Length: 458
Ligand SMILES: Cc1cc2nc3c(=O)[nH]c(=O)nc-3n(C[C@H](O)[C@H](O)[C@H](O)COP(=O)(O)OP(=O)(O)OC[C@H]3O[C@@H](n4cnc5c(N)ncnc54)[C@H](O)[C@@H]3O)c2cc1C
Image (cartoon, rainbow, N blue to C red; front, side):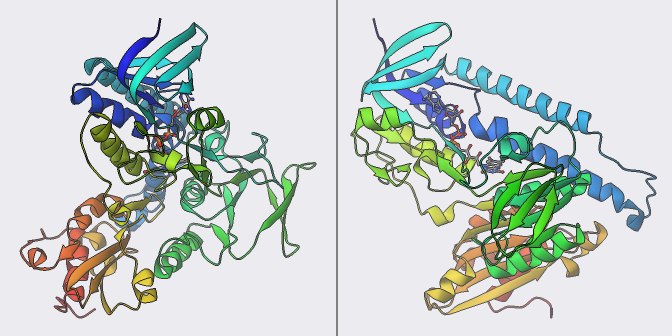
């Protein structure tokens, strides 16, 4: 006999986990089904393991430059086994915490692979057998997978995805990264710091092509200092694996030797065709089509996160999870403007932005003023020996509103949520006292220049 739940959530990544918890907090009986580990891509092979590696890499870079601050560190070298053990320990600890939350909220966590017979009927197969569930509402949070290139398919050894790149057995002497987007750039920083000779090949004309050009320029300059070679406007045609290192051919005939070829050209929604067909879901390309309530074309069935292909960010998935959960539990809520979800890249230096980009405003013919703040003129940044950052604020002059903020610099990913609160009407900004000396004064400089009230000549 089928077990009955108010809401069944398929997928326990950040989106599914948040949705399940919120539904339970609203009094619904909830089952959350996961075929691998709780935490999904984000915890197990995404955000957290990549940031763990990047944190070790960042410390290494700081240690190597410690002499500039009067501290002699005779040798700073990575201990790969310890770095990997630490990564694993952090993941295990967070998984444990999440399972504790699941229990505390009386969510029924079911391990196994879910298939759907009809909107309210779900079957879960696992090594311990089959369970039949009945659901009042269904939330699909099935995530995404790395896009594979037809001419260089993944083999898990030489041609790898970000998943393998996070837990390689050794630090490779060389790595060619196909794709200069978020994941490619983050991996480049980590491995270059660990001593790998890193080359990025990007088909478009600049790294991080979704951000403003000034950000790409600044990042490319910083990457050069880190020994990362960025080849733009070029495509990888083939990989000859008959030799070690492999030979990677580009579309201009150039051949680059690389021990590992990391393909990081984006992620595709992991929408299970069985589920799509059983529910007759309307699709938007490979993504599940949803409305602003995160409801699919089938009433009572919601979809969120990477499966709907909107932000491809963990906090985008949780924001959508909140909306789907509210609606599945009887509410009536809609997603806000996607531009208000901060975009973050944990490179050295970090990149973060929220709201409208300068280039988008210019393309729309809007009358804008751009205010800038520089780490190089900031007392705290000088004291910290960290002078490469820059913050930009964009004011729409006709509306007299700050419509976008972009940042490159250490801690940028920490500032961006606060920066989000500065979007909109300009008056409250004048009320804020920024503590001195702090990196946040860079934001103050940018905001004041955008408002036409330059604090210092730059
Ligand atoms: C290397 C890397 C670094 C990243 N870094 C960041 C970052 O710093 N910040 C950020 O915001 N985002 C980052 N991301 C993106 C982030 O991981 C994803 O946007 C986020 O995980 C999406 O969450 P989700 O809940 O939609 O799906 P997922 O986290 O992918 O979870 C989906 C879950 O559903 C399960 N599932 C699928 N089908 C079924 C089924 N039929 N039955 C049962 N279970 C099923 C899967 O096993 C999976 O666990 C990164 C991604 C990668 C790859």
